[in-house]
Image (cartoon, rainbow, N blue to C red; front, side, top):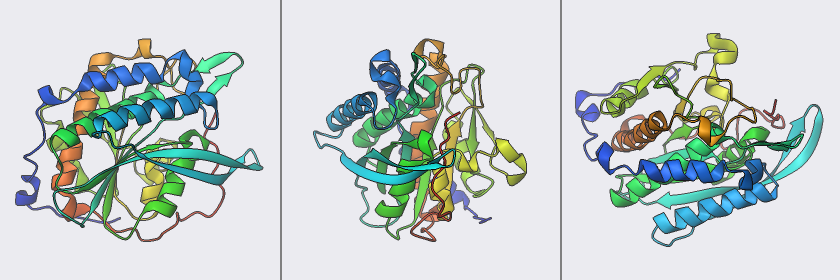
Length: 320
């Protein structure tokens, strides 16, 4: 476990983040509703619905990015599904935001846009999982374009998370250079009806906790820390979403998510089940955390310790 110390001066550096009133939470909410509609057919990788979701995100991101279209990162990988290995193709969506400072560390802000598709004539729309994180990335992009960051930031929508974290695995293998980085990953941030969201990653990088606490000060949301220790067993989320690929090569991560709920991986994960005001607060938290991490990036970002994830085995499907 890497230990990092931050000085008071560093912790007080985060001063350029936008106020909550300037964060466009309606943009994220609208995007979550669109992406979790039946028309998207559950957004399963390699399907028409997945292509529709990608086209929608590309259109929205292009508009927010001053007319500059995202980079589409097509990839293939081998997936082990119940002992049967097959080739999967997917596409990540990448928006690069230059920083005020050339070179230096990079902040990777990520969420996956795929879900399960259809099964037995039911559509698994995945409003929380993960139209919620995908929508939040649009709000983050808008804020960063209006109030530019100090450092370079990549905003990435990953494909094939539900199929063994394929998109993030290929991104880390092929798209990272040796510059220090941090990953902030958003996956299932909407079903927080009790106003509680978890941040995982502080166990591995303790210096992240005070930064997230700083970002949460002006947000009406309770942030709890945990789900990141080996002794948590199945409740250790370190390897359960796209931040896994970054962690495997030594890159610190901030993961925001909610605990399992009755709609998790069910066809009932619909937009009309989402507590919208607490989701909007989660979006505010994500935007503010992005700025706090950016301001403190030099102190806590780490260079990749390897160019490929530690495991060489084919990814295993995370579908139930």
